[in-house]
Image 1 (cartoon, rainbow, N blue to C red):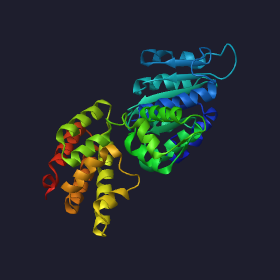
Image 2 (tube, helix red, strand yellow):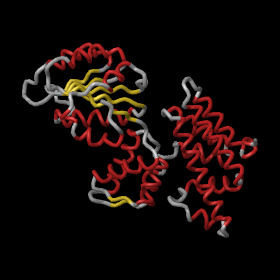
Image 3 (cartoon, rainbow, N blue to C red):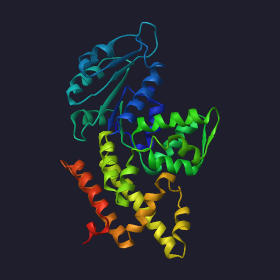
Length: 336
C-alpha cells in the first residue's frame, strides 16, 4: 500500500502491524535510517543473528528461506533486503505467501516509478510502500528540530534556518552533523546560531552554498571547484536549483529594503537567518553585480533549469555546470 508522506511517521512507528515495508527513492541515507528503525522496532536489535537477517544483493536468493525461518530464542524476526530491484519480485512474492510473522524490510534506492517491484508492492495491502526523497525547506527544518528534540537539545530558530541552508539534503550527512552538534552542546544543552556556525562552519565549506554564492559573486574558480565537490558527493541538480533560488530571493529581499531607504549594510543585517560570516564578502559582491531585472531573469532561467533536469534522460550534470558558468558571467548571460 502506498503511504502518503503525511502518514509516513505514524506508519513507521506502527510498522509491527505490517507484513513488510518497501523503502524507495533518491535519499539513500534516509532509506537506510528508516530501514534500521523498522528492524529495530520489530527485532529489538540490528545485529542479533537469531532475529535479524541482512541480505545484500548477492544473497537475495535466500529471501524465502529467511522469511520461513524461526527464531531459536523467540521473538519476531526481520529480514532486511538491501539494493533490491525488479529482479527480486518473484522471490518477494513467493516469500509473502509463506505463513510467517517475520517483517520484510526492502531497501530499493533509485527504484524507477514504473518498476514492477514498486507497482506490485504499492498495491499489496500488507506492505507499506514509502518514498524517501531529499528533504528541503520546511520539511528539512522540521526534521532537524525532531532530531535535536530526540537528543534533548534546544536550538534557536535562527540556527535551524541556517542549518537547513548549509547542510544539504542527504539524510546521512545531516544526521552526522547533528550528532556533532549534540556532542558539542552536551546533555540537555542549548545551541545558538553562533555556536552552530562555530561548530560546523568548516565542515559546511563544500556545500552547494559555496558554489552558488561564489557563482553569484563572479568567482568562477571557487564556484567550479565547489560544484565538482558537490557533484562527487552525489549532488542533486534539483537541490542546486533550490539553492540558487534561495540565494536570489535573499538578494531580492535586500534590494527591496534598500529601495525603502535602508543602507546596504542595514538591509543585509535584517536578513533572517543572517548571512554566514564567511559568506558576507561574496554576498556583498553579488549585490554589486546584480540588479533587480537581472535577478528576475536569472530566477526564470533557474526554474527552467529545474524543469529540464526533471525530464527523462536529461544531461543534468552538464546542465548544472552550464548554469554555474552563466551565473559567474552575471546578468548579461541571461539577457532576453
